[in-house]
Length: 144
Image 1 (cartoon, rainbow, N blue to C red):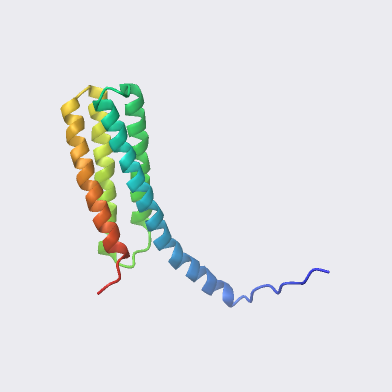
Image 2: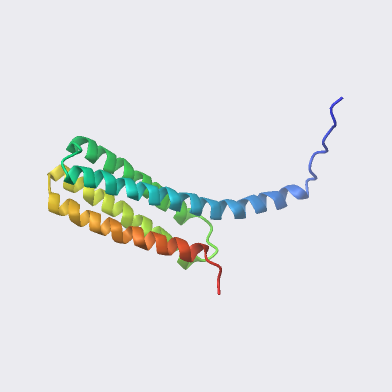
């Protein structure tokens, strides 16, 4: 015979929901930040390949468009998360916005066949990657 499990009391459910909500916000920010960092690296790789003539423009443009959309979505997710510190959350969201803008600039440069513009977009991307890393460390560092 299987043992029976008592259902949770109704008083416990709001506490459980509150605990899950508070964890999920931080987890969402963490997950989206890591996704953005990975996606930004993919932007850099595709841009490098296109600049070197190793990736067709059509492929690079399509990939960069997809990456920009992923970065936009990550930014929206972070911006909608409940902030423990609004300034820290906003710094992360700003870095994500810069990454997305750099990916869009790279896509536009690829479509126009402008190597110099693609190179500038890569520089912007690398600066935004540094900003994301700094904002991430700040967001998850204990307050002093």
